[in-house]
Image (cartoon, rainbow, N blue to C red):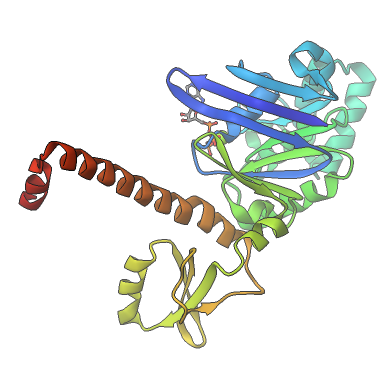
Length: 322
Ligand SMILES: Nc1ncnc2c1ncn2[C@@H]1O[C@H](COP(=O)(O)OP(=O)(O)OP(=O)(O)O)[C@@H](O)[C@H]1O
Ligand SMILES: [Mg+2]
């Protein structure tokens, strides 16, 4: 088991990861979050590429920093950035990366052959990586992450920049890997992990804002998703009312799909086909907006109280002037 306990990382004044805790068993963990949410930071901390500010990461009860080399050997990491060795052939690159993990000679070459076959690149094993397409490069990166059959596989946006067909292929490939591994898969695209993740973590500004199996998360917003059919003329008004909504063209007309806690009773509730996209919209957009509005009301109230106490209403006047 991999246990992360109250893990934080500060870059200067920027809290990139804020008191993050989770226990992970075997299975696929999808980490969903927008740009800058802290996904790569979390991965860099687990792979010990950056120094933590506070907290612990334990594997089998021992801190990974204490385990050192022993831990690095059971971790496979596919970084987000392609710091690539364009002059290397695919095979030479895997052999080189294997050496960094202490696998050398014939064993390394066999491992390279096995992995390149696994990611379907055996026929170009001797070609230079520089001549590969984006999808092929991603598969080389994935292959190197799999050296030595790691128990923990960390994938940082493994399908970024790929076309839909290749995305699906890589996603399916990853889903077949799991079983005896902890796979941590970061993405900002719901569909990447929708059908393959056993657990989904939602992170925002370094904080975990939701976690569960996909069905738990979906059950959690039951009754909070609805659809309303409208004309083109009505659409604009409705969109102003529900800023976070998906519009689609259906047979019965334009349909707005909205999420929220107090949706109007006349909207048709979506019951059986709530999906992770709705969960994403609810947590990342709706709740966020709601909280911001609440904070604003709270600070207005504080201001009002202040005015009551001081008899100062100058800010009201200035508001009117605006
Ligand atoms: N090396 C660094 N130095 C300073 N700040 C950093 C560094 N790496 C990340 N940050 C900051 O930490 C926060 C989290 O960044 P991180 O890269 O972890 O997000 P992310 O979820 O991986 O985003 P993306 O989807 O864009 O990859 C951001 O505010 C980012 O600017
Ligand atoms: Mg990142």
